[in-house]
Length: 493
Image (cartoon, rainbow, N blue to C red; front, side):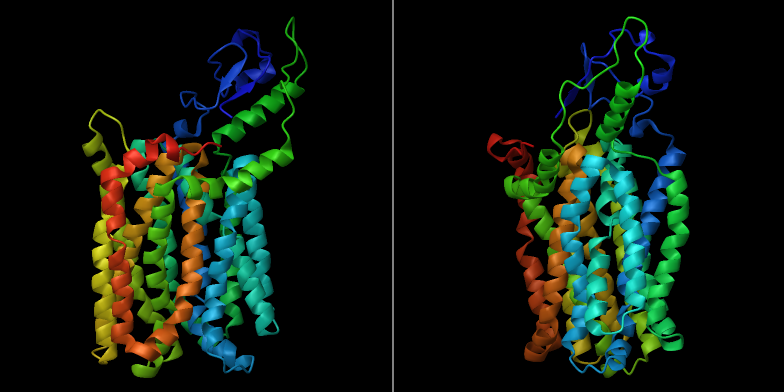
């Protein structure tokens, strides 16, 4: 729906003073209409002060860091958990990590649609509250089934990964989104960088339950200022709230109280919002291919993250605490990847577009570099670990895999935000869904792959898989605009 039909006064000066502050949000473009796409108003989120917008990015990025931190701080403690619950089933070592990803796969199809009905802000705060409650549940778990359940629910309520890119789209214009998109991802990379390192020593000194209590304390500390500072950024929701205020205001002078021309069917609206992410994936080939493409790179990194701990403890004799250090290399690679995206994304977009159209496809070239880096990293990691070379050599491979992973995620999210504008959260949710599902399922094959082929050939198979998807960004850079604009592939909401 592009416009709301409201019985507005023709002259804004005739609005009651109570509504004059809200009139800054309302941009009449024709008689009795409000333009949902207008970004010229001072109340539009893109016109908020730079300091405030970057404060919001910092808060959301920090929440992302805590979410990712909650996943990775847990990794070194898995052997300790299995011992406490008297389990020798090594499959649980993968399930305890992967079940979170399954939750993240479901969460986007709930969180993204709700944010486009009720706004980003309430969904963000409620999801964070539930995340905190489920984290406490994990800390108090008395058996593996209970722990697995709370880990799954934690994954479902990860909101910042889904809503963050949409908030960037809300607040920044297309030619300035590259840097905030990169900055939004940067704090989250401290999770894989520091999480296992900190978690290893916490589990060793205080026990595995304290890895959950640390997350509970951390998210509570940052959620408090978020409740005070953050405000709604989704422009259609801001306009909707304003129109409701005008409907409730008393009539003034000769002008009646504004009223909606019809009552929206909330159930129908919710159904439409729920299916919107699926519509984007089904009817937009570019969104489907890119979402799946980014998930392939992510799953390659994840299969390393869930298996490397046991490899270093057994093959290199690392203790539980020092084993956390092995995750630093992939984390540093991810940070390097985000920095490259931040420095090049907007610059390349402006350079290619000149004074012409800023095409979302201009965000995609880093994907090719990311593929090359991931292939090199996987091969190097596998074969150096296979022959028990110096312990630092496999970690150099994980650095390249981490670097390539971020070059396959940040440009895709930037493309989806540019291409789908007001429905950016729904578009990005498709990518989060595929990343979560493959991140959960692919690592399950890790132990069997290593046992059958060995680390060297097993990692090489993963590298060949990544290599097989190189044509996707090449094709979309060349023909993506045609696919995006072809009437057969237009997504109608």
